[in-house]
Amino acid sequence: MPAKTSKTESDGFSAEERAAMKQRAAELRAEGKKGAKKADGLQDVLDAIAKMAPDDRALAERVHVTVTGTAPDLTPKTWYGMPAYANSDGKVVVFFQDSGKFKYRYSTLGFQDTANLDDGDIWPTSYALMDWSPAVEKQVVSLVKAAVS
Image (cartoon, rainbow, N blue to C red; front, side, top):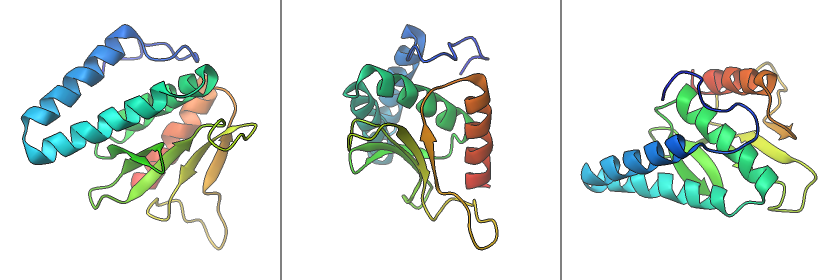
């Protein structure tokens, strides 16, 4: 992806970002069965995001761009209908749950047990996500990097 020329506000994907994701999905399908599976997973994530309410969708889009940019080895897929990102074993590492899914007051950025976030005997595995800002993006990047380290 290009350097930070895309919006960091909660405005959603730019036309260029949408086009690039569609192009990547087509490339994966062209790679054959394994590539097609990845492309289908990416498309499922994009479709799940598109179905969200506008505020949730804007957050999910920023999470998607941040996770895929920070950890390109994670594979997008849906998990219980939510956008998720799995390791090479197909196990979910990080997921996004929109607030509308269960009528919560906040969206959630969550990590599964495959994430390398262990810190002693107790550590957070999910985070309430109300708004997107450069500070939030920086924290998400840090969490994702640790999760896949």
